[in-house]
Image (cartoon, rainbow, N blue to C red; front, side, top):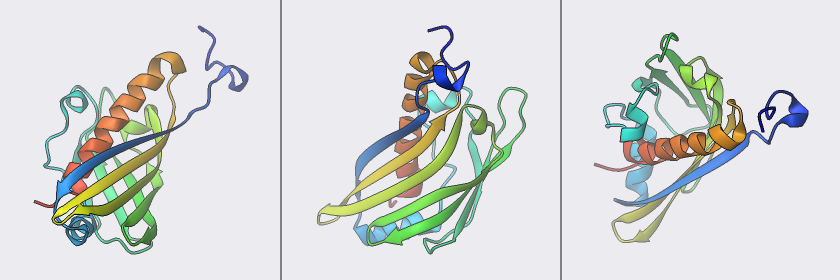
Length: 170
């Protein structure tokens, strides 16, 4: 177990996927409008993500059309300064959008490689919409038996946050 991650042959798979699901008040059109307006970084982070993780400070970019961009500026952590995660709308459809990473020079890159965010939404009853946010990433910390569960937990918290900060109508 102590050698896990030292070489590729001694490494567990690094690809991970985490999904969060939440019912929000509002129609699918409301959710789509809010998603198109972009992340609201003033939304409070979950408690776990407030204990030293980089925080989103500002966001540039709106829209849900193919090639629309999001530049999310994060605070730094430890000795690393602030940086940006840049996402591009790669695919859209009714009740669906896929964001793919263009670049990442935020401190997050030391722990994980953010790859894809997929958001799906559908009406479950009048005025109530289910939002499903999936984040695909690659774990960059070893050993997997220790860091894997912590990274999945942190990314699940991030997906929960993204539903509230980027998809929930207010």
